[in-house]
Image 1 (cartoon, one colour):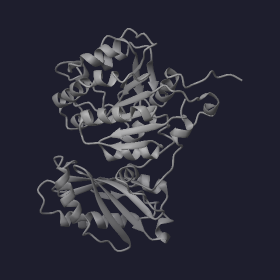
Image 2 (tube, rainbow, N blue to C red):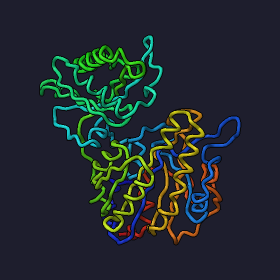
Image 3 (cartoon, rainbow, N blue to C red):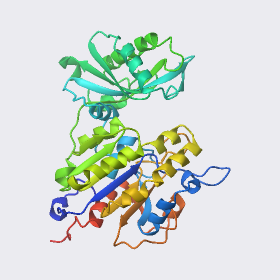
Length: 402
């Protein structure tokens, strides 16, 4: 069941119960061949282990079995939005997250500074440059001009930026969302199916070519990668659909953008678990649904840093008692996707899912890990069902009958 379940308005009800949705980005992993253990197996996480024993546990498929999800589809599914129906571009989310409202003639794209050598991308994140370095490089990109298209570039976080392409009305009318979805810039310059209008793609490639020239003196961040070409869009408002007063808390703009898109109040904090939890504490009395996003596990997984991901999970574990002291009626812990360090990338593997409700009583799970959660009473579910399970556990769903 999901947000467009046709009988949702018949069974949803507003209550005083409070839900906390903790999303550990890239939570899941796979065993290292040498040890046979995943990051969760190795991590010393006694608080999560104990919580697992008194909760319902299982695993979730973010999009579809075997399909590797991006962050946007993975998160949309958690909140009950079918990611195969609600296609939201990464560029739009990043732009929204830093406070940019797109006009009808604008297209947003998410960009990475990268390292480009001998015609090949050798580091897709340019060594994870600092925020200040990103700001300096964005100033250079804003010097690039392309005939037929106004361009504004904004820093986001580390190696990430957003480019806004403003086109005249005659050109924008020729560009469909399907067209934008077909643009592939995975190898610096963009390509598209021959059947599609090539004008916009040529303009983008002109921007990329000039960007390479202006960045040519840089040792690491001497190239750019673009993806997630997208217009502004609207989605069903979870505040109205679920009868909630939701808030989203994150240190990263994209997830702030996602929270705004779904109708949540959004709070951006510094990159610190203490700041994230403090924001939950400070807003506890004023909301009944909290989305808290923790990024570090995903970043370490993408870098192939197994030990670093273990440490990020251990760091999260230290804050579990403080979180549980708030006495939420329901606490959900899951991830938007798996990011195994052994793969240095997102993967299709199911993600651990824990739902705490003091009335549950726990199941046979003894620790917080992928392997143990296969023994949990939730079993294997699609992530689009997590929200309905959360609402049910919090007493916000009435009996379904006619």
